[in-house]
Length: 428
Image 1: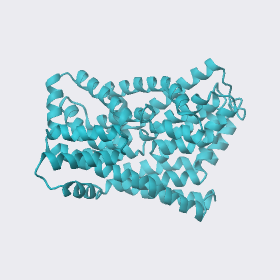
Image 2: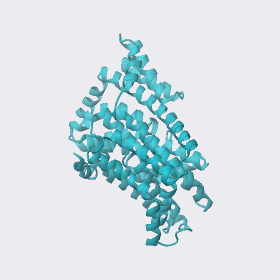
Image 3: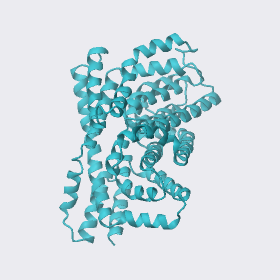
Image 4: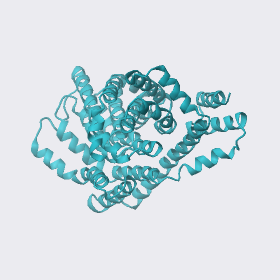
């Protein structure tokens, strides 16, 4: 009865449009009130204490670093570098967008932030060159999802905190899968562009090594950021949380004193934007933890784990069921909520059949990253459509080929562990 109340109230709240964080909190509250003798203030206490976590401090600082870098001219320099590298190819503007998103992903760690930073420039540019509107918005929406795979990644930080898994190892494990997804998206965009006759960028009609060197020089301060972050973590100089703080300080120094594009007003706006994003994120995390905590009290995760392991002892079958489940969940629940709620449920299941926790972290994040571009939730779809002023229906249709390719990448990542674990072994 308690389980029915918990999930019944959650589904009803979701269907009538209640925000996901409130839905999680209300459903846990209803289950405690009607199904147990526990005090209802347990929900508030758990929501509050869940945020008292040193690893979670990395999240607001990585968000702030990404916002300040976007305002400090780093996005434009990354776009210029991407243009010299791939702008001369068929569908050059779309390829430039994807490469720039991959660069920015190594800085911001957030999918929607990457879409907003790069899509704001590139969607109008593609539309102006007669690219299909839906395709123009679908490209950054899809490529922006790489932002949660390539380190530093906010969802990987969260998974590490919830699952008690090394964030450093997760960051290393995310490099090759992130590159794989990026290259796959580029190939898809290239073949679509070739079929539709999209021409190279006018700025870069051919590849010139001198132009690349010049763009590299302009973007050198941006490209140093992931080196400093990852090098510092794996060199034992600082923790991932301290790395996030370092990234903020670096962004301020580069934006104010080197690029000279950050002033007091833009820094203030950056802090205010971060406060709003972080407040939303932390509310979701807090109530997600309360929801997950109540499920643990009712032994729901262990019951689900027992059901799945009784279903089959074959790792291939178990992992296939988990992948399908994650793809469906990603369509309806945001990445942060899904991570907090599902990690304690699924991690014991997959580790029982021999899947490494680090490997599963990458599988989980990549699967939920696809949820960024799958309706009806599809956060990146809405961000891309909003910044590019494109109808959401057009973006949704155009994103289908990219979703198919990303699912193929997910299957490869899930069933070829070396793609993740080869780099992760260096950090363990």
